[in-house]
Each structure stands twice: as structure tokens, then as C-alpha cells.
Image (cartoon, rainbow, N blue to C red; front, side, top):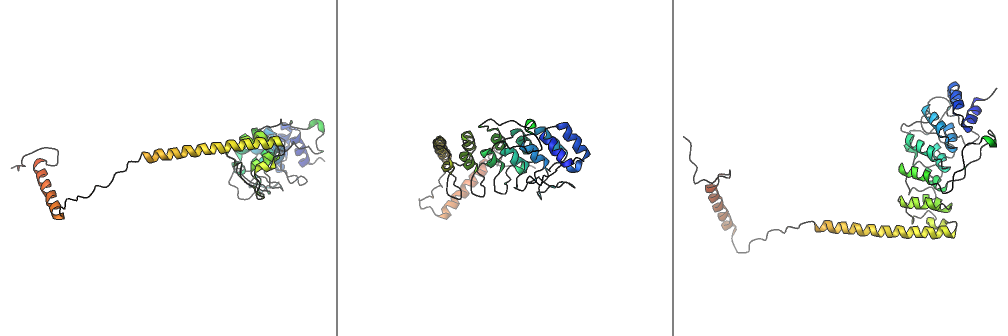
Length: 304
């Protein structure tokens, strides 16, 4: 007898949308279907890893993972899923989609599960960390033969996944357990376009990790090191220009303030009594000429 869990995984790897629908209709309890021989990756992990956007949409529509506020990050073959699927490495499906640069699936998962965008795995790495190091496409297990392997090879220097994550608010200066930011990953893997994209998005190229090293130290080639230094020079120049503009704005703001000095006290030796008498006299004269309504009168008659 064919095992339903293996059949569902094979259908996902074959990217057979109709078969996945049919199997899950008859075996809804295997929606999440964690593979305990592969880090407990669920069905959505598998679809994300191989960039199977349509199957990922089906799984989400059937209730795979929850968009509710996360209290506990668990999954189960039985009962309602109470959170987001997390494998034994602490990675969500978004982590795997980002790691293999599956930009369409990354966009889908960011929309449905925004709380996972900056979630760290057990090593403290966010999806943006993994996208910055963009590992090669994984090999499929023996469940599927070579001719039916899904997905296509990602072209080199594809920044689309990084751009999607940044558009959804990924933190470019998040640090992992070693204190590395995404720039450390990008330089270590020689991804020069990723380095530029991250710096332009606000990553600090002078940020040091716990070992005290900046991303420049991890440049794998002389070319990468020179390129990085040029980016840092641009970053420093831009920072200086912004500081100058900020100072100019502050200077203009201070110049627009009108300072009104306090009226100097009279030094003619006039006593308090004399000033009071003068004030009373001015009030009496004003009373004779102005009734308080802007009307000039000589006297106020009483109406009989």
C-alpha cells in the first residue's frame, strides 16, 4: 500500500498541482506532513525550497501555517496548526525560499506571513542574511529522478529576492549570533550586486561583528575588496553631504527665529507712584474719548 505522506511529497516535487489537490482532498491530515528524516521540513518548506509558487498558494489556502499572532511556533499532522512551520534549524519556509533565491515564493510568504520577515533561525540569521549568501540550488532526494527535478538554475547575481525582502521591511542591519550583518554574508560569498543593494538600503558598511571585523575583511577576491572600498568611500561621502545639509537646515531654522528683547526699564528716575498716576490719567482721558466700541464721544448721556 502506498504511503500518503510519501505520495504527497513526491507530488510536490513533481510540481503536479492537480495531484497535490487530489491527495490532500483525500488525506487532509497530511497537509503539513513534516519529513522527520529531513529536518522536519513541512510541505510548505518543500514548496518554498524549490520555488513552487502555485503549490505554495494551494497549501496556504488550505490552512498551512497561520497568519494569526504567533504564540507558539509549532506544526502538527493532527489538529489545527497554531503558528508557522519551523524545522529543526529554526528556519521557516521563508528562510528556505530566501536561501535559494525563490523570489516569487518569497513575495507570497512575505504577504501572508509578515511576522517571519525578520525572524531569526537558530543561528540568528534572518531570511535577508540567507538571501545575501544565496546558496546553490539544492539537490532533490531519491524520491524523484533527475529528469523530473523541479526548478531551474538561478542566474548569477540575481538580487530579486533581496529587493523583495527589502520592500517588505527586512532589517538590513540585523545581526546574527556572531554579530554578522547581511553585508558580511554578501562579501563572504562575493555577491557584489547584493553588497551595493544592501548599502543603498541603509546597511552600515563599517559595522563590526563579535570578532571585530567589518564586511570588507571577508572579501574573497581582490576585486571584491576594491569594489567594497569604493562603496564605503561613496557611503562616507554621502554621509558627509547629508550632515552638511542637515547643518544648513539647522542654521536656516535658527536664522528664521526673531528674538524680541525685553523692553528696557525706564531710567528717568520716575517713581512707581508717578508711573501709576500717569497710567490713571491716560485711562481717564481714554474713557472720555472712547466708549470701548471704537466710537468717539464727548460725553455719555443717560437715556430717560
